Image: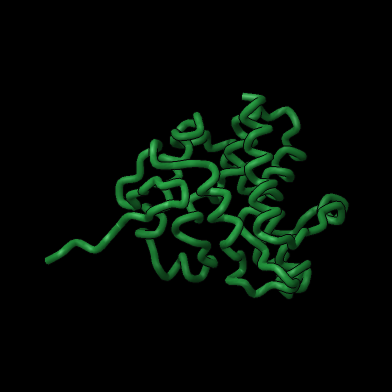
Length: 196
């Protein structure tokens, strides 16, 4: 029986094997491009443009950096890349991830490790750093839920935890064309890379 295709050809010309990803097949431009076209919330958001995973990643890194101003640039880069595997596997909302099970998590972990190695990060980042990035991710999700995804504050509190109103009131979401978001994502990556 013929094996199903388990690779993706990228615009850079790289071919990424999803079952056995290697760092040499990963380029930041491919990640930025893919994430700029992947919609968060399954596209169920207000506005003329989808709220992309690239835009979300920029916000998570901004929140992480704000909460951890003395964090080294490598952990800020890890925050920017926290959802990078979604450039090839897409963004699944939590209920879908739960129904798919461990297979999705294993695929995500393999891709994350290869991406981290490609950009000079450890395959697995320290638990304490991962927790801080997750905290920033939940704040971002709360803001997204209430500003563009139709959740009430009470619903967002229930699913993402109650947030500090003084902090979240300073966050305004941007819904921009994919080209602009892609450029900002690669721009922020370059800034962080220069600080490493």
